Amino acid sequence: MTTVQFKTDNSVELELLQKINQALPEELQQQYNDLSAKMRSQTITPEEHQDLLTLIDIVEQADGDRLQHLIQLSQLRNISLAELMKQLQIHPQLVYV
Image (tube, rainbow, N blue to C red):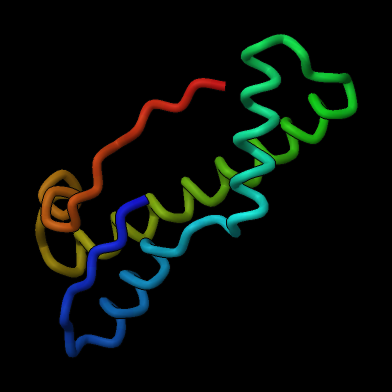
């Protein structure tokens, strides 16, 4: 994820920007990447598959939270979500498990 820094005097904007830029913990992201690779190569065990499903829930929740923060910031700035994402240089990524 790209981290873009903006100067703002608005504490609400600053808080939203910090939340938007907050990444998953590196260990969690690595585990997700490793298990996703095993799933794609069809070498995942049933226990690992269950772990992956749990991680998918965590990632989806984090993505949903981030989207909500983006929407709030776009409303605060009175611009479209697409324009805000362009300003912040956020590009949607397709994820394949």
